Length: 104
Image (cartoon, rainbow, N blue to C red; front, side, top):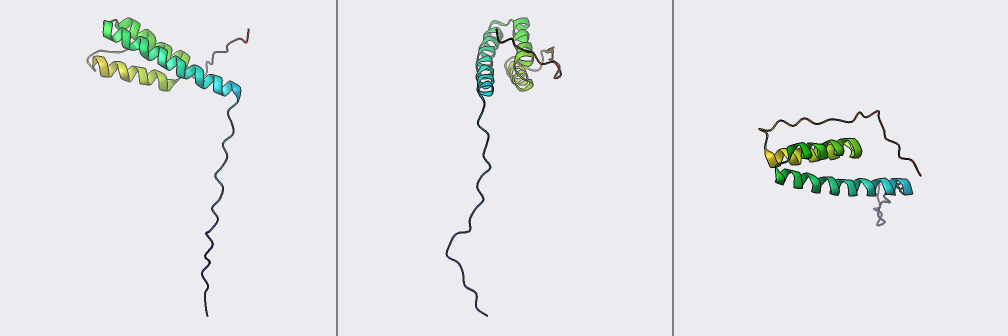
């Protein structure tokens, strides 16, 4: 019995296509990126000034207006800057409450 080896490469399956983002999704991503930059800059200024109530305000806005991940990133940045000796009390936005912005 003789076996012949094929010299042609084995076809690989095409990668799954990702759906293109809608204009709304692109706008939301752009908004969240700009929000993260603004809140991070404000948080850094507040921490450098030693204004912890203002820093907490920026962290709360990260949770409420951004995303849980943004709020956590801001909180971690504050803890790294000030240290764990400070007690941080932040307000988490409920996941079931989604703010709707009017189109007007």
